[in-house]
Length: 239
Image 1 (cartoon, rainbow, N blue to C red):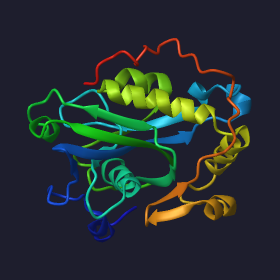
Image 2: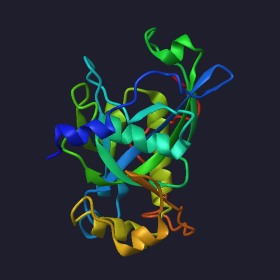
Image 3: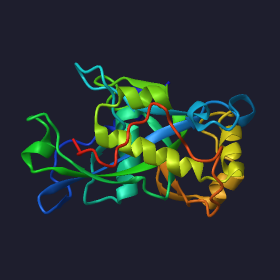
Image 4: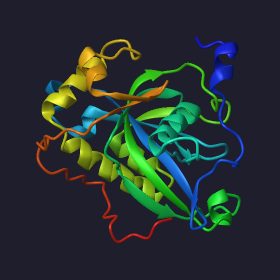
């Protein structure tokens, strides 16, 4: 259990003095935290059943979001994504080097800083969770929940985050089968543990996160991902 003294060193950042902007658009960085919930023998290489993603709630809302927040001028885009995962969801892990994509969006809420400043540009990554903290900076205002892919898609608040989830599945489907199996094996040990192989190929970017280079292998798992519940997002306006 984390103590209050330990939590003092990882308090959530406040204020927007260091916030990055581009043409009056607020720059945001976030991630889709995930874990391997079932090995391939049990799920038949079906990514929908193999993976779970972590989402967080907001006060007085029933829908969910992935951790995200402002990218500040004293950190890299990747460091910002890892920081938001720690502050909002209380998780640490290995950030995949390849971006899921970039989305420009405007919030429907007049109280959202994005709508007041003209919009936001969000950069999203995939984060393999290696440690889940019992206490974290924003736990009084947010609950976290592990979900299968289908439930995450249905509960997601924003359409652009659904698009990010689709891209996440595409990237994961291109992972070498061996890489997925290694992640599955490491998930069965203590969450804070990393294998020697993982440490060797990762670059530390902060005390709570490291980057794993994208695999050069592109062997699709179970062929093309066809999700019966998936709507076509390419033609949808960003919200």
